[in-house]
Image 1 (cartoon, helix red, strand yellow):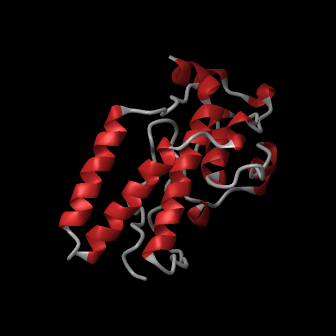
Image 2 (tube, rainbow, N blue to C red):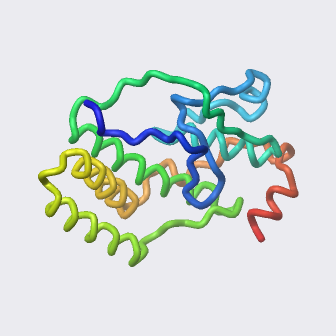
Length: 176
């Protein structure tokens, strides 16, 4: 279905901690992938964000290459896309908790999130005639709902990182 997902064509994704790439758009050298321990299979979602965080915490950098092309299979329905957004919201909270000791701010419950959720709900209802906007707002609503839900068990698992590989300069910058 066209229009369910907005593709990032401007750069890496940044939610306020360290930037990351979507796993469907990520290329990585095998040596670096193995050095940081690969994808963390204990995570149900956002393995790509976790991997990008660990890469940067070891002092390596990630880059956006705008001239690359990918083909992806989109979710079949708005409901499937909303469920995906909900899970992304929950997983962002998991990563915030897991990386809190590395300077990530725990999103917790914030009045701004609730205000944004309510605003998105009102706009969603008022713009029901515009399907593209309706899908975008629906995804936003479900992502916020996911982030407001109780923490998943993955949040209590340790970060899959070799402490000896951490770059102290990166940690100083993140921890202030």
